[in-house]
Image (cartoon, rainbow, N blue to C red; front, side, top):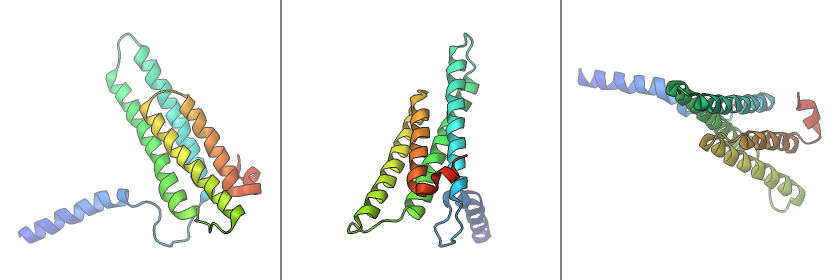
Length: 160
């Protein structure tokens, strides 16, 4: 009986928590939608911006609604984490492929992309730490620069 109960608990934990722990898609599925990822990051940035504005507005009220302030802070942090997750597990580990140093032009492009992604991670972290809208603007600028570096001359076609 104990063995069945243990196995059931193990399966339930796996069912509820494992799907959240696995990023897209560290098996060679070959199913990628780069444009969608860029749109998702744009939406996360917009949500972070709204959250920051709501936190500031609620914090200025004479009678503070701490419940709502906390909810907006958590929302902001979750969306910053989603940016970091997409940058790390989608672009850095799967889409931006290392290039041999001997291919100087290709290697320079690789370094540019990795640098932009790293800067996006830093700005997402800073967006979690503050309500300073400068980090939102920097994220937008970095995303656009990365989109141009990523798609190259085709970037204009991918920009809405």
